[in-house]
Length: 327
Ligand code: 13P
Ligand code: SF4
Image 1 (cartoon, rainbow, N blue to C red):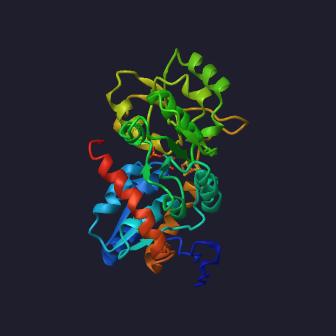
Image 2 (image 1 turned 90 degrees about the vertical axis):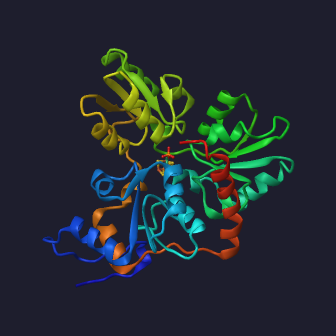
Image 3 (image 1 turned 180 degrees about the vertical axis):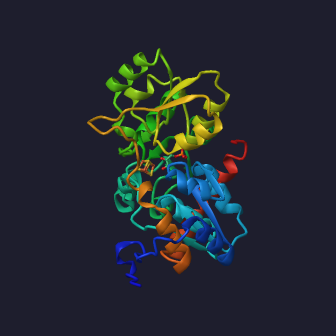
């Protein structure tokens, strides 16, 4: 058996093809007293074995509440980092350390520090899709579920910097009427949806409703009947009398939506170019094999500087306190 080191960001070991990965993962979870948390953008097989599947806020809350010794995060790096910030004494595992995020990458902490220094009287609200170092320079963290709720709690005379997602920021400006300074970052997945193809798709499906994530560009959001987080989109679809809906977010969410409402039709919104898929290349680095190996070897593990952790904990705690009312 060949075990490679972690220099690739994940453990690579040749597996016996007859291994029942699902059963092995369940066994190892018990053995290590681990909880498996998965984001909606994970492949269906991973969602099906997770102890909890949710959006960024739900996952942060679960990570904050868990009593297990080990948190295995089937998501991307900033999510696992958030779990570590909340649980310094627990082991937090991420199956592939390369699972990053274009929004987090768009906002390096040193550049962000210089940007922030240009607006000394501004409060900093950062979307959770950023590194621990950028969180450490923020006053409040938010997710797409609670962003509007949090912005509305800031006194009107208090100027705000919002980072790093310019689309979510622009959406919040529109919804709340607050004039915020925006960092210029985008999500590579949501930015790629095509307005022109969306209009054509909507016409082909008799004016089907469009449900969109606020990370989408304004050109797509203007055609949306509902705009919200992944959980918001999921709940809207459950409660809507509509039978056909076009969904403008990473297509992993369709797995739960189809399970919730087997009689309804959910169509992924089309991206620009020839590709018909809308998958996040970072989220999709996680596989059942990597989850199995990660549990088996207890690696790769998230580690971080304690000073940064403490600085990043403050705005995350503030988010959790300010969004108790958000379900
Ligand atoms: P939510 O699941 O919180 O809506 O966020 C979507 C996302 O892009 C996570 O990376
Ligand atoms: Fe980041 Fe976009 Fe992937 Fe979410 S979908 S992890 S925002 S790149």
